[in-house]
Amino acid sequence: MDIINTTKINITNTINGQNGDFCVIAKCRAGFMTCSEVHESDRKLLKKDPVFVLTMHKPRSLQTVEFRPEEGNHWLSVFARTGKKIHFIDESILK
Image (cartoon, rainbow, N blue to C red; front, side, top):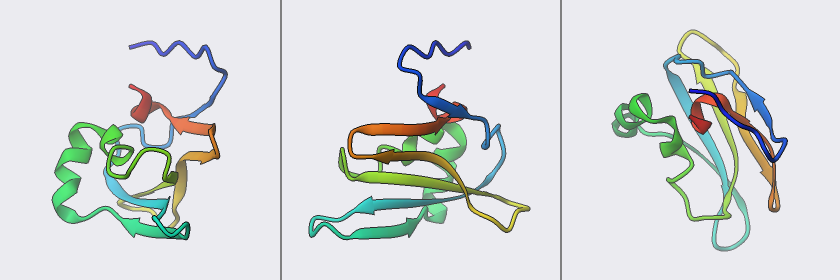
């Protein structure tokens, strides 16, 4: 599937079909940033559809999504936004 990028958002290819953990940074109702990892029960849904990470939180509260491959030690950002502007998103999430 080809992706047509009409908005000129930077696209990464970090996930690329790999298994791993996700960490989500989002704003809570009080306005504070919170960090949460995806639970084991949700991993089955992520393997089928990585966009599930974006739908876990209320709209406009999600700030950053990070991915750590199974054999990796470092978290890699796969989605980042500030305000209404999306800085980059992973190709697997877009597909």
